[in-house]
Image (cartoon, rainbow, N blue to C red):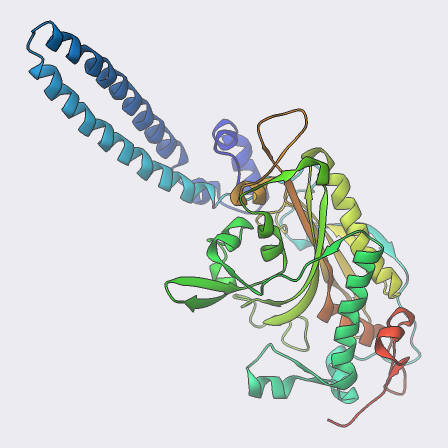
Length: 430
């Protein structure tokens, strides 16, 4: 969430930012100026009446001590008390309306973010590796998985429904191997601390990272007594909220955490897209990277986090590219995002496998995550960052497509062989 004073003082910049994000400023800001003026007027009027009532309250005992009639002043003071209560109630109502406007305003993009209207305007930063060469026509992962007997979408439909998957034998083992490999690299080589968070969170947690209230339809809600719980759409939500309403020790920043969780998304509005295979699922697994940083170091930390995610792809020998997202393709909460896109030869295209973002203080302000620097006594908001390190399912399918052989088998990347106990995935019977 943006600071109220910042929004008030930068309305033209906010309006241009919204246009750059492909949003209608009038629909987002609504009657911000009117609400803000009414709110400030109610607060000022309450303070004025309170000051006058305080003056009367001090005058009344003086008059009574002098034997003068203070009944009118007493009556006036009672009337003023009612006025103050009414003005304070009005101010609270304007506060509520103001909060509704503020939570609907997305983050300000960093100056280095390209302005664009769609994903077509994202800018490629670099590439790593080369696409594999085949002397046969490579197949997509949905054909490979079925022929190998390791990916079963039909039984997933029977058990649950569409956009779910069942992994068999070496397919299940490959998923587990990838998660363990990623966690080992990030904890042993990149300095992250592993955490296993809950897979359901409360509404405050969803609000803190920006999923609520705007994106409720994209989430899986679980009614629980008198409150709602939510299946996590990403480990970003529970891990970031571990420090909600806390003041962090400056000496411990940056804090780097990694977590493996299942992720659940309703994919509202995406029906008809990526219907084949496991590109877009209601449930998928992911290793997440989360950082809490001092503001002056957060963009340096974004580069490091992105490199940490890239190194997983490099160790797996997967060709990929890095793109910086334009203003219209960024997430609601992000100030700058790099997408890592892996090459999929069975589909002859690049697919996103990680998004690495700096949210600056946007999430920290919503979740009240602060730190106290050595120079300042008043706590300041930290900057939060996160990225996939990586999406396990998409890495799974990238390995199938990139390491497929003419006989239908799949070579296991060397770094995964200690986890898999084999160097090849061969066909099996369902």
